[in-house]
Amino acid sequence: MVAVGAAHVGAVARDSERDGFGQVECGPQGPEDGVVGVEGRGGPVIAGRAGQCCVEEQGGQAASALGFGDGDAGEDGAAVDPAQVQRDVAPQLLSCSQVDSAEPARSGKTILAGCVGLLVGQRVLTWTDSEEELRKSITTVLADSVGVVVFDNLTEGEVVNSAVLARLVTERTWTDRKLGSNTAANFTNDRLWLATGNNLRTGGDMASRSVWVRLDPDCPRPEARTGFTIPNLDSWILDPRNRAEVLRHVLTLVLDWTAQGAPIATDVPQMRQFTRWAQYLGGFLAHHGIDGFLGNADAGRDLDEDASEWYGFLSTWHHLYGEEPQTAQQLRAGAEPEFGAPDQWKGTFPTTITGKPLSAKALGKRLAGQVDRWRGDKVLRSAMDNHSKIKLYRVEHRADSS
Image (cartoon, rainbow, N blue to C red; front, side):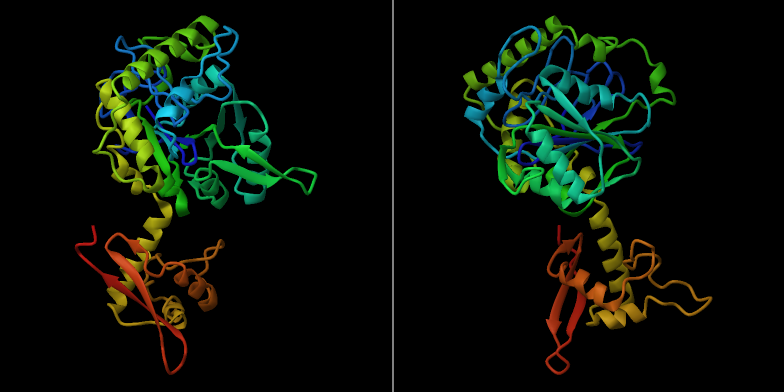
């Protein structure tokens, strides 16, 4: 099961009753004992970044996303670094992952994320909507030697839309000012970034930089489930002998893959700068009999809050005005219905944080940032009126835009 981030890896656990949210899905029979399936399969899988290994245990044992920092396996003293094996083979950028579940409690998302950190050391952070505070938190945690960073239990329905996080997952090196000084510091971005929550969505650039992992217990009381292969996985992984066993299996699977030439998958979806990473990780999984990596990519795109809002707005615009050019002022005037009249925009017109329609000036700035950007089968075009020197906008519809 996997959720992966850009510059290296990020994951977000998301709870939802909708089908298919992540690239890899967790079957209803066991996310808490680490048994994770791809496309409904029950075999366990461990996945990660270029400095991370994916594991399948044929007998149905522990599974988790493994991220490795300095190679210290913990109290057992086994200083192994499977990450380095894959770094040498596939030094690629990775995407960000998001884990999703239908039930807010006891679906297993925190346990799954925690198993990674318990193996290699983790830091749990509180999510913040403040870009400044998020930047400071990232800089601080990168100065530590932990291998996993978890934003745990985000607010239900939270929209993960952060320019700082989008920058983080696409950079190999993080550069920022040291806290309390004017000196810049550089940190290698080699951590596994995870986030967990219920019914999370993405916005802005995060949608194309995220991989979703969906946990669906498919029962009204997931905390009452029994019959797991490994009961109490969160405490089981604390035993140094168990951690050593997991790492041994990881190394065995990675070395078997590399011994066969590290075959890649050619049928994974395009992921911009993360495509090469997806091909290697998909190839690793396929080599060990787990097909369908990133098979839920389309479902993940549907959870892009930003794209959904813009598509709704452009669709209503096209319905009202066709491809007739409009100014921002004309559009804004149409957003104020007469008293008692229905809202012709049906709630799709962009609003301020207080819910009021954007001013003409603010709307113009937003529109300028969307020009030539496709939203489904709609795209916004612009041109300058030669007489008034005012920018005009129109929505173009193309049925074959897919």
